[in-house]
Image (cartoon, rainbow, N blue to C red; front, side, top):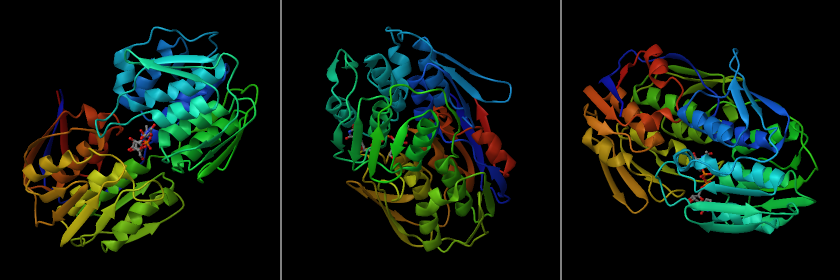
Length: 420
Ligand code: UD1
């Protein structure tokens, strides 16, 4: 297992950082490329262990995928049938492996994959994905660690109401419906920006999707899709991570190459903390600041406050002026960073899905463990402002979702080294 060694506090943090392509947009788009037998070309796909795992999954199905000299990812799925024997280990590595089901079911009439894995932040059932496929006429079977969906005569358009606006279920159902016979409507759909990005890619392949980004999708199935060409949107969670890091250090930071509107839920909270920004078409510049004021946060589906920025914002709250509260409503086990932050001197108490944070003047460096992707990012943010050396173990979790994280932090003045 590898670790980061960080020496804090970083007093000279600041400057410009270029935001990478979004992990959560790239993964569904990569999977959806399998809907067509033609080649698709994707730009701005981040180099992460999760995108590498998705590439291996695509290869394991018998499809072609490579990155060209300029960094574009080419995917071609000209196979007549995807391979059947799939690797448990690959699928169990990431939650988004479930998104392979939609293109395989829609195009080949059957799919059987090992149950997906991913960050251990809750039970993460897949019932909504499967109910959607079943409503479109698929027969579902589960057992022996596999999940199977089959629609011998193809999928049929259906009216689907999601009990909860699940991001993954919305993506899977929307993708499958592109090749279904007839019109599919999805109500109470998730409206995350990554879903709009996926719809843009699919419509570029010839799909007919309306309403992406709203809570109602209307998808008119077509018999065939051609290959697509698409630039993956920037990673709003990576941008938010850098902004919360900088805010904790009182630093100026300009995050560039991003879709500013997607960061509104975070910017609203940072503004409430007393922080100031300049925003342009594709950048956000945080102004140097004094100690921010504590605020309360409740995670919600978009456009509410993102659960994927909860841990990093809690790391910021640990040194804010006053008491803050964080309520996590999306995942039942997303507080694993709290004991680690407390090792660094944070004052946090929990009660059910609420955390109460009493701001302290400073954190102290300590040896801690990244238990999942965003929890790990929160520890990095805490270590950058803590007094002394911190060692963050199990950084494999962090590398799932942050491209060149230590390099980017070093370019901003962070004293961070990755060691094996
Ligand atoms: C995606 C993101 C993840 C983010 C999450 C919420 C990707 C690859 N991952 O995950 O980073 O934290 O959205 O913004 O894009 N649920 C069910 N049944 C289902 C599906 C989900 O009960 O069939 C529940 C989950 O347990 C969870 C909630 O719905 O409590 C939200 O999950 P969902 O929106 O599906 O998240 P993911 O797509 O897994």
